Length: 376
Image (cartoon, rainbow, N blue to C red; front, top):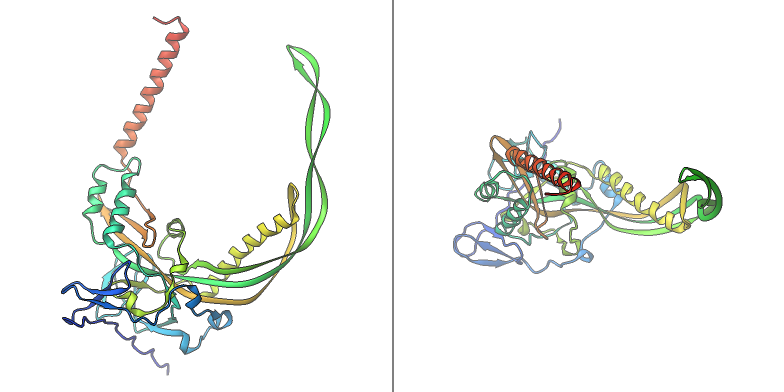
C-alpha cells in the first residue's frame, strides 16, 4: 500500500504588533503589516549574490528519486486551462489562475518537488508594475480607444515567483571542419552598352578552402531555463535580461503576500534545453577558432564536466482581464519593468488607417499627374 505524501505545512508570518499576516515589501528587506504599518526585518542570516547559493551536483537533481534533503512537499492549485501549478500555503482550496484568469481548484494531497535554492526578491511594487503596463499599452498601434483606462481600472495584478533552472558546466570541445579564405580574380565578360557589344572586367569573389581542426573550452555559469509551460515562451523571453546577481538563498519570508509557481518542466528536460543553449555558444566559439571569411563545421565533440544545477524563482507581476468578451494577459518583469502581453486590435482604427493611406496615395498620384502635365 502506497503511503500518501504528508501534507505540506502552511506558511504564516504574523505581525508582532497586531497578529495580522505580514507581506514582503518589494524593493525592501523587510516584511510589512498592511493593517498597522509595523515592519519586521527578515532574519539577517541571508547573504546576497550567487556566491551564497548552493549549487547541487547535477546527478543528484536528475535522480528520479532525489534525496529528501533537497525536496519538499507542496500543496498545489492546478489550472485546467494553461497548466500552471500555483503553490498554496494557507487554507484556500480554490482560486483564479494569475496567468489566464481561469478558476481552478486544489489538487489531491501534496506533490514532492526539488526545493528552490534561491530567488530574486520583488523590486517593483504592484503600482509600479501597473504603470509599466499602462505605458506599454499607450504605445500600441491600433489599440481600441479606452483600452488603457480599462486595463488601469481592471483586476489587481498578482505577484508570482516563476520557476527556472540554472545549469553550470565546464566544457571542452574538439572540432573539425574547413576554413574558407576569400580571394578575388578579375575576368572579362561581354555586355551590351548603347545597343552595342562591349567587354567589361569584373572582380569575382572565390573561396580557398583548407582543413581546420582543434579544440575550444568554455565554462558556463547560470545557463537559465524556464521551468514552466503556463506562459508562452515568447512572453518570458521578452522579459530578459534577468539580474541573477540579485539572487538570495531561498527563504520563505520573501514569498509572504506573493504566489509561487511550481515547476512543470522537470530538471531532465531543463538540462536538455541547457545543453542546447551551450551547444549554440560552443558552435559560435568553433567558428571564431576556425577563422577565415567562411567556415564549414564537420563535427563537434563536447565533454561536459563539473555539472551543477539549482532551482530558482524569479519575480513576475501578472494580470489577466477580459475586454469585450475575450481574455488578455500581461506579464511584467518585477526587476526591470519590461512588459510583454497580448493585446486587442481596433478594426475601426485599422480601417481608418487603410483609408487614410489610400487617400494619401491618391493625392500623391494626382499631384504627380498635374506636375507631368505642366502644372496649373
